[in-house]
Amino acid sequence: MRIAIVGGGIVGLTTALSLARAGFRPTVYEAVQKPAPLGVGINLLPHAVRELTDLGLLGKLTSLGIPIRELVYRMADGREVWREPRGTAAGYAWPQVAVHRGHLQMFLLAEVIAELGPGAVQFGHALASLVPHAGGAALQFIDRQRGDPLPAEDADLVIGADGIHSAVRRHFYPTEGIPKWNGISLFRGTSRLPPGSVDPVMHWTGHSKQKFVGYPIAIDPETGEILFNWICDLPTGQPGDTPREDWNRRADPGLLLDRYRDWRWEGVDVPAVIASATQVLEFPMVDRDPLPRWTSGRITLAGDAAHPMYPIGSNGATQGIIDARALAFFLATEDSPDAALARYEEERRPPTSQIVLTNRAHGPDRVLEIAQERAPSAATDLDAVFPVGERADIATSYKALAGFDPAQLAARRSYTPG
Figure 1 (cartoon, helix red, strand yellow):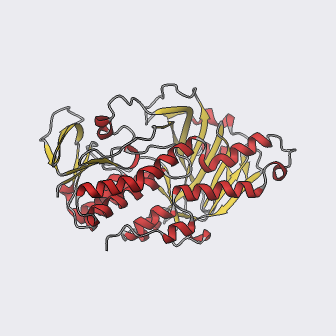
Figure 2 (figure 1 turned 90 degrees about the horizontal axis):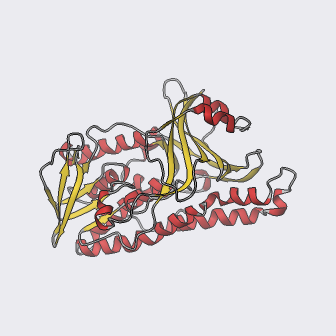
Figure 3 (figure 1 turned 45 degrees about the vertical axis):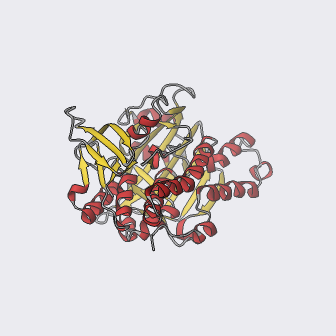
């Protein structure tokens, strides 16, 4: 079966590797002419790390990134709202790993090429159009740099893993328009910090109108220097405004320093982190509405092409990796591609749609919103107005929704065929 994967990011490459391990020979078509380790940090939750472990990648993954052992939520004045262990420290069989997105992508690319050969990834192929037919689809690509058409390809099955601006998705939903912006911008950067200066902890501080998120994503094996990933959330528009979607838009760190000048607590000095950044990039916090259907004929969607969501709860890349594994599993175990695509969508579309909507309501970060609403003054007894049991319920319910409740994850079947 000829399988075309449109998009060579984390989800497309994980899909290719999963299909290869299941006995298929897919081809990945990536618009970028020359791949590079771009981006900042991401978190892979235990249910995604389980899938990468089943692909034999755990050892390399943990050497690329940092196994996270704890999550701490604080208010801007330093009051602690919630603290919980993460990964193996929380009793999971798999760690939670924070890693540089670009380094993970290059690692997966190398694995796909080692498994399928260099011809399995066709760079410089931007999808211009696709024409569905009874046995699959015909795909027309162009060289994005020159604008020249490339030879048409035909596939028995097409997987759109081409991100939030998916050309595959746009083919079926041409009037959907641009992603939806909530008026918040993410100012993202990485900073190099002295050896031993921070622990493998995720820090979530503030609330939706001014938040700081930070965690380590790598350690230099020679110097011990820590690569620290961080995000500052600030409103720069109104919900429903047209977002500024220049994904390489540089921001002045000085604009953030004044807003975060007093944000210091045990473990992280936010002004020092911002001041030491090599560069800061501004991204709009955007998503899209859940779709009524991912699959049409022999064409389906995965990852951000299917369910782009706010980066809350560390679920974007995680859910895309699970998509990849589930799709390969059903293609290997169902009687026909059509049955496989139906099972895949039945299993993956409802929960990811619910995560999109829950993240719009702040997801697990809701503990910070409630704390700010009920106890804006440091003189207020937080425990009296926001009982710890209520906070625990928020954390537990989000884990169950996203598929990483410990018992739920341990009981779930494997996505490895056979």
